[in-house]
Image 1 (cartoon, each protein chain N blue to C red):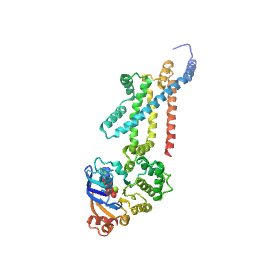
Image 2: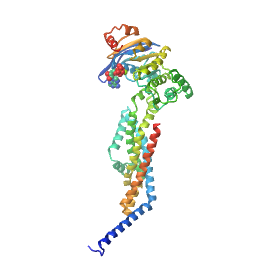
Image 3: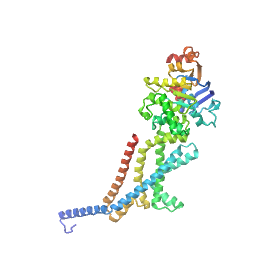
Image 4: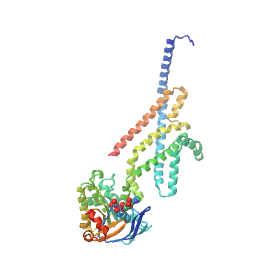
Length: 240
Length: 237
Ligand SMILES: Nc1ncnc2c1ncn2[C@@H]1O[C@H](COP(=O)(O)OP(=O)(O)OP(=O)(O)O)[C@@H](O)[C@H]1O
Ligand SMILES: [Mg+2]
């Protein structure tokens, strides 16, 4: 479903991605792990072109995202993204956060959008919080609203960039729970995470990235119990 | 010197003269309250129209400055730099005597509004740009990641948040502009300072006339800043 070929990305002289190749299937949950600064976020952000790659190709269902004339606004509608710092719209209620894109971009009528949004907010456990502003929510609640907001566009794939890294420990579980449900429903997901437990339990495949290179990939069992690459071994010995 | 007064008589004589003067000076103000008010109203009118023009031009110039199209950002930057980098007084003279007559026959008030509006636009542009840039970068990314176009992201996400940020500096600009309109008295627009000039020329009551002019300006600026505080408080909720 997602094919990445020889992806290179530099910021000025700093080469952050040094030729990434991978293939992600429909309904697959891929967890990306690796040390800080290894290019995980950059990789994710290249997929929906929040960063422009200098070289290489990304194809989604055969459509080239990286083509200069690609209709990036439409392509992004099919890719939900969840950020480490939530990035909810602070001037809108949770309900408006979720309905804004369907109403403005898909020209859905308000009632229909609100019905869907209420359903999604219920699904992430916030059915009673439709009328509050983000500033009145806890971190875990904000992140769950952010997930609902992304889901409202019916994306084919969800990209998560360390969705629990800025949360207090007691809130991590509630967000991972929502993500796990999503995975069980068959959503295609790419999750950059430091939650090794989640990667092991929910991930179908784990990518280990280091210094801009996809060093090793495999099933959670392969990566966590029997890593081949010395870098992977060194990294895992530090975090596990 | 001997004018036939004793020192004491001289002293009291001057005091009485001074007193009379004071009373007469006071009379100048009382008798001309209508003129002062008319001047103040015109000052307010010039300010409001200028600010209106300034807001529109300023918004366009701010977005223009951030545009990726080189020529648009170049024009915007040149406009902003010129009007911020030269004295308003000179701009008024240049526009009223030089540029505007080439285009149409403007009254002093029209010229004043055009000059102050263009000048204010440059300052508003910088205020708006600062406001937009103060909105967290993640907001634009979140909007774009949902599939919004740059225009939609600006309209629904960035500008509403920038608006809250720019209200206090815009109120400040409003106050500055009101005070700066005193410069258009030089082209005989009959606003408050011009009223003061006329009255001073006919009465020579400097303290009373200019004092009254100050009081009128102060009442207006104070009213604007109170309005600003109220708006800010309302926006905070
Ligand atoms: N906009 C940018 N401009 C310049 N350098 C950048 C930019 N974004 C990222 N970098 C650099 O690129 C490298 C990779 O960054 P990236 O955010 O992809 O790492 P990461 O693996 O997500 O790390 P972390 O676990 O800390 O989030 C880092 O050295 C970072 O400093
Ligand atoms: Mg990162």
